[in-house]
Amino acid sequence: MRRFLIILMDIAFSSGNVTGANYRAVYDFEYTKDSINSIIEKDILYLEISKNSSFCFSYYTYYTDSLRNTPDGQAIWRKLFSAAIAKDGTNATSFPHKRSTFMVTKCYTSDTLCIKDMIDNDVYEYIASKNEFHWQLCDSTKTINGFEAHKAICSYHGRDWTVWFSSDIPFSDGPWVFCGLPGLILEAQDKDNLFSFRLVGLMSNQEPKKNWLGNGKKTDRISFLKKKYKYLENLTSIFNAEMGTNIPENKNDTRYLDGLEPDFKSK
Image 1 (cartoon, rainbow, N blue to C red):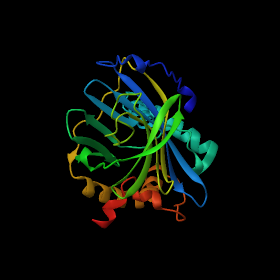
Image 2 (image 1 turned 135 degrees about the vertical axis):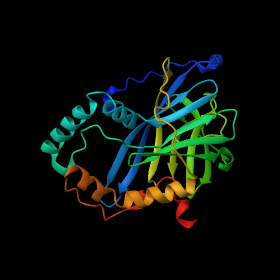
Image 3 (image 1 turned 120 degrees about the vertical axis):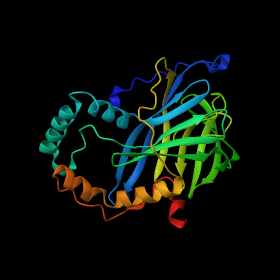
Image 4 (image 1 turned 90 degrees about the vertical axis):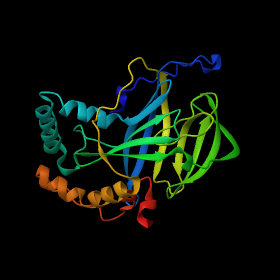
């Protein structure tokens, strides 16, 4: 699936001429679903960067939604799903399916983030603050994709993160909700090695993708994360009932259910 990417590191940031242009940063996003059985899920995130804002989302989720929302797309998806099940049984993953469902909009002139996310087919949206990132800059440096990267650490909503950013790329931004450093975040890893983000491409982008969902149900971060946790606890049985499959539940390592922000469990 990753072969669709033709990555072009084609931006001459040394000229400083980035005003008004649109760019796309592409990240590999990996998250552990079962460390006992070494089950790692993989996603590709697009960070669409424009003059005044950015928009981060999963390529796979965008593709799946785009397919299923076309006139014949639902039938096409069903055909691909059935073929994948016939070939690989309940371990099938080759059919188009959503990965990360969060969509994060950052307005560069605002201190807030707008986050949309989904539980089943319901869309929710809430606001978070950029000011909750308390970065500590470190002395360490390394080269990533030809850029000099600097290390920074912080604790954010229940996880300790180490990130590497480059001031050679003058965007105070990064994958997911990350922001607030003097340069684009190139890599991020949590202390427990459950989640990682890694920049794999950066290119000019003449047609940035836009938020394709309508207005969501207004909520707050903690309420949403609690509701989604309960949904994910029962997701396998829900999927089996809807699709007529018999996928076994993962009872070995369920830390992934806590998500990127596990502090909701103590609220």
